[in-house]
Amino acid sequence: MGKRYRAIVIDGKRVFVRIIIFSIISVIFILIAALIYLSDKSIFISKEEFAINTVSEYLTLTESEAKENKNIISECIKYITGIDIYDLRSVYMSEIPIIKAANESYILKLANSENSTKSENSVDKDSNSAEKTIIPENMKPIKSIDSSQKTALGKNSSSKILLKNETSYSINVNDMLNSKLNIDFMQNPLVLIVHTHATESYSKDGETYYDPSVSDRNQDINENVVSVGDVMERVLKENGIGVLHDKTLHDYPSYNGSYANSLKSVENYKQQYPSIQIVLDIHRDAIIYDDGTKVKVTKDIDGKTAAQMMLVVGTNDGGLEHPFWRENLKFAVQLQNFIEKKYSGLMRGINLRKERFNGHTTNGSIIVEVGTSGNTLSESKYSAELFAKSLAEMVHST
Image (tube, rainbow, N blue to C red; front, side, top):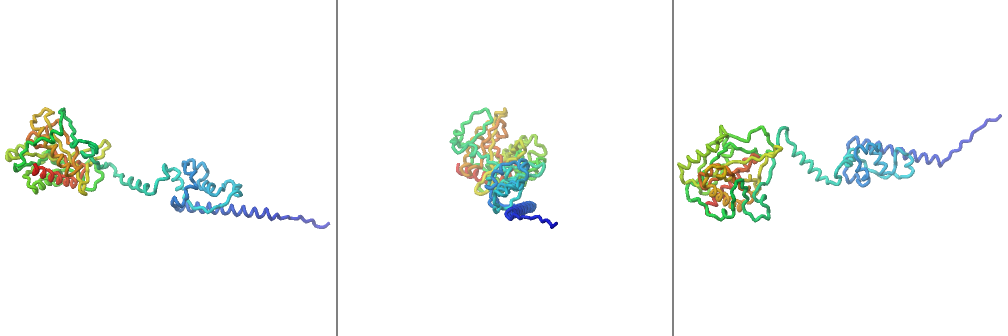
């Protein structure tokens, strides 16, 4: 019996198709391997290169939804190429375009972004701002604000003077602006500078936060409001105004009784120098928000940062004798108006109070709040210089 042979028929067309399929699958896996490799190397590309439009429908997914869709890389490949690597039948229906590598974490970042259209510049700006707001533990921020009379009144206000009236009295500011002052500016010495709360001090230059446990007071007269008074004294003398400066720490060692202490000083000076017409009690304010933020009040004047200032006038509304409070207020209103014409924005609104504050000693007795505890000493000294220049010019022009 002869040998029997089985004929093997090779279908060339089927072999060719299988070779093509195998080649396509090989290319796909090479692309996947390349994507994974690039992802591990943390290579980030720009939004322009990434061609956001090609994956826009995936940018609305949350991270959990992206995981549920098997793998975000495979999903991107499917969207870009039309090929689902989990369904090889899709190979027959698509071509493989040239695609760019993208880091998976970058895609997720875009997908979870609240605003994917935000410019790169604005993102960088926000990042820098966040860094600036980071402050050491147990510290609180210092915030700068504009607390000027001009800002509070508004552009459309017809008022010239902002008066915060905390008394029961009705005040006509316009009448006070146009009234003659009962002060003899020809006297010499004319001005007495005192400090009821002499140890009030300021923040250091460049500080943007502070330690709430550290006192805002300093016994060093070169660091507290006494040094602000020194500037006023110097500028007034340079402008031909006779001035005396009492540097007693009336609030040390005890803060209680400081007004009684400063009253004794004023009365002693008046006894020695009956010519005194104006008493400037130099303080600094303190503004602390509920969250502990310390406020500094500033205004740019001629290219330099000045601490904004506030005049405080006492009355007899609290029960203590004070026959001169209206004269004090007239002086404050006219001085405020004079300063604002020269240095717009330097002054905060005038504060009229029930307390007497030793204002009964002369017709020109006022409290001058120079900045706050958030302001720096240099800012406050600059304001003192502007204030003294204005006062001297007002004296000479009256």
